[in-house]
Length: 94
Image 1 (cartoon, one colour):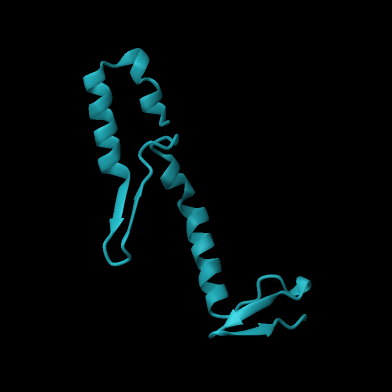
Image 2 (tube, rainbow, N blue to C red):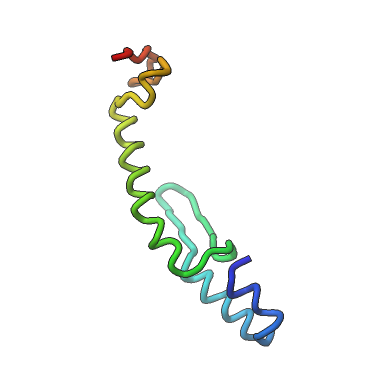
């Protein structure tokens, strides 16, 4: 439950709780028609600044995934296999 919604039973009227939930839903609901995906995180328990604070870590993860998709070796010491353009190859240990 989000921090604000947790307070609803104690501090707010039912009308204010509904309004708060609607405002948070509008702020955090994501729909991508091209992908056919929607996501509602409005009732997850994170504060308003959490998403902004996670931005650097998310960008680092996206960059790492992009590198892997282009053929970067994730764990050369483990001799892991990886998919390359639809086929599987062994990574060389350097």
